[in-house]
Image (cartoon, rainbow, N blue to C red; front, top):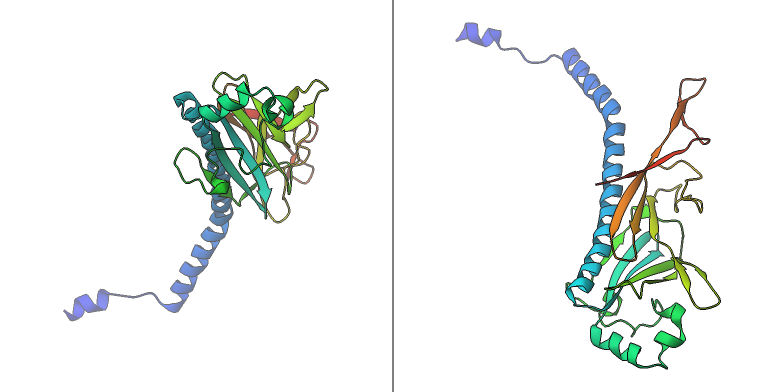
Length: 251
């Protein structure tokens, strides 16, 4: 037994110090990569949640639960609040059959974001049925701050419309141009909105930049921007502003 005991050795102080130093070096090297991976995953998850909410409310139109629906996006208190709302067939029919209703008189307000009683089911007004939802995302931003916008769909795409920041122009005859996408980027202390021009090209470098796109028929997809980089004279990677990158379709 004494011979076996003599062979059992513990770590001495120097060996413990070496182990701790090695662990520290490995952690210092690996943590930035892990942190970036985690942020990328969180941003992507938020984008997928937005996509799923828009898809979900469109599915309710196809099932006949609603005749007219809305996806509303609000930038508030350093986060995005996305809400789906629904109008039942009976209410839409009454608006369509009334030639003097706001539906015909105020075409630009069909995708209403101001009237609390406009939608039959609205989480903002206490609706808790599973057909409509509201999500709050505090880790992402869009191209506007302190404002809101909405896009509305119907089963036959006839009443496709927009409101707020997602309605880009209004012609004299009442027709409107509706945005078909929403830019999403990682929210940080130094970034509270996404820098994207009217052509959909970023004007500054983003850690993560996505766009959620939809058609008037309710098809929803999302893309990620792949930034192009150069190696400068000091051997460091920097964004190539003259050839910034490309949008890549995501699965």
